[in-house]
Image 1 (cartoon, rainbow, N blue to C red):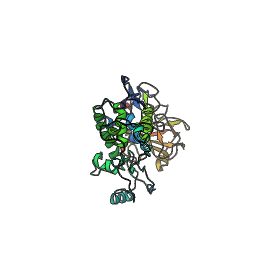
Image 2 (cartoon, one colour; image 1 turned 180 degrees about the vertical axis):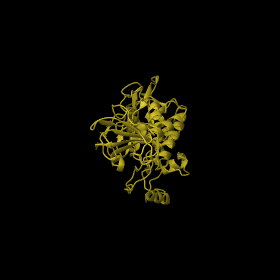
Image 3 (cartoon, rainbow, N blue to C red; image 1 turned 90 degrees about the horizontal axis):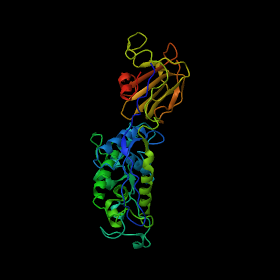
Length: 400
């Protein structure tokens, strides 16, 4: 039987708000009505590793203006999705492997825990460098003659928290007992919570220069007290012109983090090959070391294109013993898909893929009695963690 794509599965839902602010006056007028969107994954959008974190962070906020695409665009601007990003020169990350959500090695994490992750000379906090008139007073660049670009504190991690901000806003998002600014599983939920609080505050200041979303972004970048001092988003010229550019860039880019629901299925979910299903899951037989078939076979000739079933990150690509040439992909829900007995592997470890991305060509390498694709769904990346692929694929709108 040939699989049929019923509907593209969204990584997350959001609302596109094309807000804007003027450099000379507060933004006003009606806000465009939100429209349904799906978070774009992969190389052209959000790394699938962080998609669920972003979706959950947005869902935890009751402010509908805060969406996963907005948080994604913010991370793109802050760190380019790099969990080891620093705002000052410092030793780079270790070369050895870290966890799936935190790429630091155990040695690097222990070292950071001892030092607090601080460089020898840490810059002061944003609060200590806020410039402008007193709280609650609007300002313009003309009110600040000769003021140099405002200094920024040392910031760290995927969401670029300063030490002072992390002490106030950091959370233990993955409930492992540690609030770790370097771990996206902590930093992304903290980013979402902080933005949610800033949005609530911004809505209480309708006379400020900028929409609530723009005010919240400015507050995230330089602190809410600085927004108060400027009476809204800082102007393009003056000490905090960089903040103006930051807000403008995020507002312009976050619609690009989405694809319309019902639009192109690229980046959605699909079957790995076009061909009939063969040996079913858990068929018994002596051909398999466990006595059971751990996946589903697709009967296709050597050289058939094999595609990723959905958005994810390649964690294995190459020789795999009895599996021959194989590819294993981690998906944003924490499951893994495996593609085995390939004649040739195209994917590389660390590559972000979407549904339909070519990862290799079918074959009969390893322990195989003829050309086919062996396909598994797993709880983990390794052999022995398999689950039935059929209900999993059906949940994605795919039928064998």
